[in-house]
Length: 200
Ligand code: HEM
Image 1 (cartoon, helix red, strand yellow):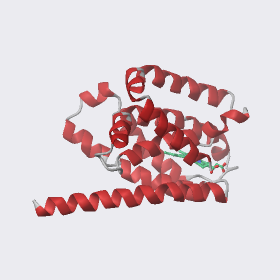
Image 2 (image 1 turned 45 degrees about the vertical axis):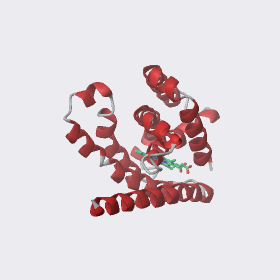
Image 3 (image 1 turned 90 degrees about the horizontal axis):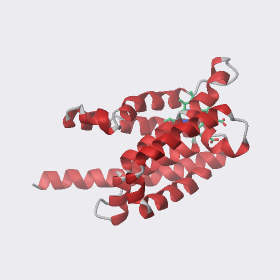
Image 4 (image 1 turned 30 degrees about the vertical axis):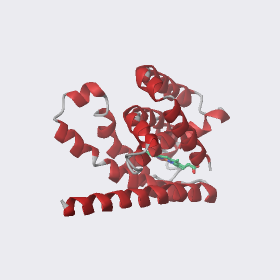
C-alpha cells in the first residue's frame, strides 16, 4: 500500500516546490543516479526496500501519468505538467535499481521472468533518453511527440506487471485503485476532446 502514499507525497512536493524542482533538476538527476548506485550496492538495507521493489520509481511515473489525465485548467495540473519531464527522468533513473536488484535471481532461474515489467522497461528506454533536453532539441518536435505516445503502451504493461507480480493482495488492490482513476479520467478527457473536434 506504499504506492498511493508516495504518489500523494510526490504530488504535494510538485505543487509546493515546482520552481525549485525545475531550477535544480540537474542536481536532482545526479542525486537519483547516486541513489541507484547506493541501492544496488547496499540492497540488504531495509530502508532501501521501496527503491528495490520499484515503489519509488513507479510513484514518480504515476504522477507523470495522472498529470496528463487531469483537467488542464486546474492549477494543480499545470504545476504537475511543468515538472513532468524532471519527474519522468527521476522516476526512470530510480527505477533502474529495481530490475538490477532482481537480475541475478531471474538469470539463475530462482525467480520467474517478469515479462510485463521487462516489456514496460524496454518501451520506456527510448522515451527516457529522449526526455533529456539536449537530445530532445536534436529531434523534430513532431517525431518527439509521436515517440512519446509509446508511453501509453508502457503504462498498460506496468499495470499488468503490478497485478501479476505484486507481492501481496494489498499491493495488488493499491495498483488497481491507482489505475482506475487514471483510466477513467484519461478516457473522459479523450472523449471530450474528440467531441469538441467533431463539433468544430
Ligand atoms: C517500468 C517498469 C517497472 C515498474 C514501474 C515496476 C514496478 C514494480 C512494483 C511497484 C512492483 C510491486 C512490488 C510489490 O508489490 O511488492 C514490482 C514487482 C516486481 N518487479 Fe517490477 N517494475 C518494472 C519493471 C521491472 C523489470 C524490468 C523487472 C526485472 C527485470 C522487474 C521485476 C519485478 C519483480 C521480480 C517483482 C516482484 C517483487 C516481489 O515479489 O517482491 N520489474 N515492480
